[in-house]
Length: 310
Image (cartoon, rainbow, N blue to C red; front, top):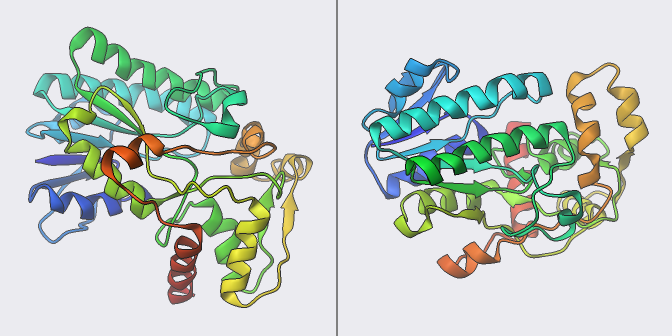
């Protein structure tokens, strides 16, 4: 049995499909879980409830924490430590391995131009401090309580089914509906994006590789160093449109943030867009002989998916 906590999200749905390679017993746990595979076990769970989490992880050999909380600092500060604490307790009680799907928010601001698993940790944002707090909770349980866990870390992601992917929302969806693409802060900085289908394959593989535990892994991401302008150009060419875009500058986000909580929450993260942002996944790719999807192919798949929905 392998359990996905936070089922139904962009990552979890693809992960559930990939886990069929390794097990016929998959439990999907969330507030309103829906089957991905015909034989999935569904369990309605509020992850902030300790007993609910314990019930969801009982009997599982591997537990994947892929929950996506509302992009609101207040929610993150109150819910992330609570949920992760419950998951750690449950995994220890039932002797489960833990795979935590993580992001790059805890890295030092100066590490963003070339991030590796060894990059210095010093989050410059409040949301980054929350992410660091929960990672430290997991690592402390690994050191002192013998929790068997690994960190699977992703860059900003995109993909055909990614409802919240930046390339999807700001570029592909705009182009397919005839609108002008958007970009944040600077269009001439390199920005890496992890292709979600690759991330799902890799997360399932890591969770079922005993030697991967006790480590941080960057999920496979194209090593192409493309700027926002180049990514927009690829997407525009694939839909037969001329290159054009609207830049969401920091001051514009500040203005729009007066009317949108989500946009307001993006302001403190703009240090990731005002400089190069390169995510190095060489460790994983060499270990597992994995070739990440190119941006050309990934964006094409996103466009085709968006057209089917339009």
